[in-house]
Length: 166
Ligand code: RP5
Image 1: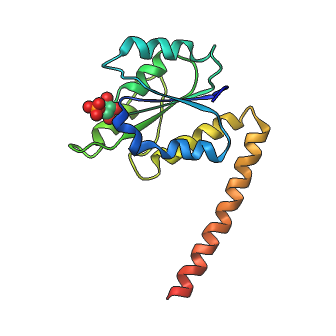
Image 2: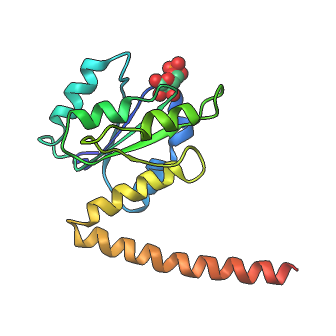
């Protein structure tokens, strides 16, 4: 994409199958984004450089996904004034509780907006990025109004379907 406003980082390519709904959500809203594998532990200097230059490169939001000792979002937040969305990735050993705590338990002064492990987490990371963009982009905000209105219709249909099946 030529003019990305959202940067998606993940600690390993093994994360992508678990978080690809981030991209699906951003695609739904026509948001341009870039994707990179970068690790807080394996490539700390690359993470620092990426986050430090993100603002001047035109990014508005960074989504950082990692599993286990998931320090990626926090390290990114340490190097930028852009809002950072942390996405804890499910893990085989501890079920993602490790990822969740490492992502969400930030010290004061360095906020990270942490999403859920699994479930709606990846989709919500994308949607939250859209909402952030919408604070300065009326067209994006209008799209989110439309999205909310569609949700009402979808839930009403679910309600009718359930009743019809009983
Ligand atoms: C983390 O370690 C990554 O975000 C990934 O969730 C986990 C395992 O990485 P690999 O060993 O599959 O590369 O840094």
